[in-house]
Length: 194
Length: 84
Image (cartoon, rainbow over all chains, first blue to last red; front, top):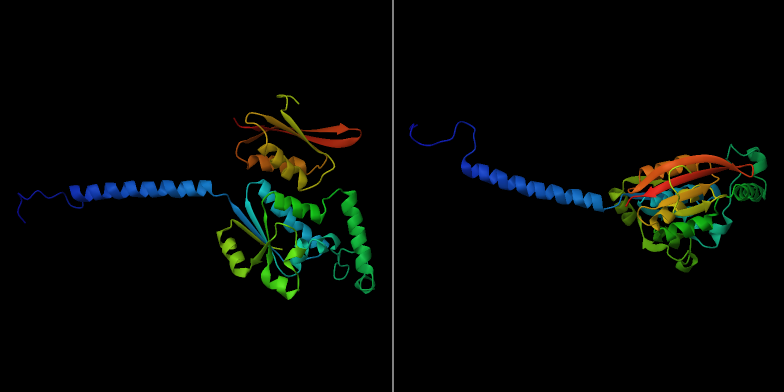
């Protein structure tokens, strides 16, 4: 190798390589800034899948949804199977609490299974809810909708249970399925199944 | 209230979780920048709930929280300032 050829020291970049690196670095800095801006601009997301329609199980998804909305989250609650009862305007006002299979009920299952016992335990629970000034399911549904929570009713279970879309609260999203719920869950920061 | 006079007062006495936080958020959104919101609650859970909400809400500063008694009932007061 001739000694008079101006070559850079071993491993050092040529001026051309150096310039290319600088250009690449500027591009990456720009890309990073845009990613950071996107993250800062897009609110955090929570998705809850609500599958239960008993009085006790109707509360947690609505309470968490309205609370997360107050924290600035984009919230979607996907209601499927008995979770649809929460969005059904008429049924949501008459959700029941089962006395059977609930070890916290002050009665054995043999008694709890008697006709009319669910009415009794539901009545007891409603009395407590009223005494403690806990919001009703109807109030929580209306409030969540006001806050911009997306309350979704699974189309497959609407058809399965034979409901009409008009029977749900105004503002409830219909025509959605597992794929759209899953897609939202993938993008969400918090995902819960209730 | 020790620090400053509140600009607005939100009365959520008698209301329970999640109402105090949800309504605080609503009132805070309508508050003018630099203003202070006073929240009056009877829910003892509002002490940690509103502190947590303020800590994770941009532009909200929890100035003070106090527990008092009104007519034999415990009352929890919260003071939140909105950034200019």
